[in-house]
Amino acid sequence: QVHVVESGGGLVQAGDSLRLSCEAFERIASSNAMGWFRQAPGKEREFVASISWNNVITYYSDSVKGRFTISRDNAKNTVYLRMNDLKPEDTAVYFCAVSGAPGTTTNSDDYHYWGHGTQVTVSS
Image (cartoon, rainbow, N blue to C red; front, side, top):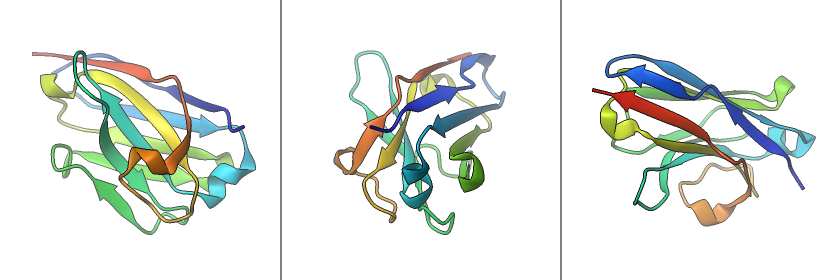
C-alpha cells in the first residue's frame, strides 16, 4: 500500500495562483508515473495532469494547458501542481494518484494509489 497525501489547497480569487503538493510515502512512487485529477460538485472526476517517473513526459487536460504545471522531485517522493491564473471553474477537490507503471497516462484506471484530496475554491 502506498500512502498518498495532498496539501496546498485553499480559497483564492480568480487570477491567483496555488501550488499543490503530493507526497507518496513509499519509494515505489519515484519509479511510477503520478497524476492529478479533480472532481467538482455534481461532476465526475476528471484528469488534470500527469508526469512520467523520470520527469520527461507530461500530459495536461485542455482546460488547464498553459496555466498549470506538473513537476516532481523523486528524492522527496513528491509531485507538485503549480496552478496559475485560476478560474472559478477550477474549483474542485484535487486528488493525487500514483500509477502502476513508469509511463504517464491520463486514464484514472491506471492509477492504483490515491490520496484523499485537497479542496481548491476559486471565487470570482
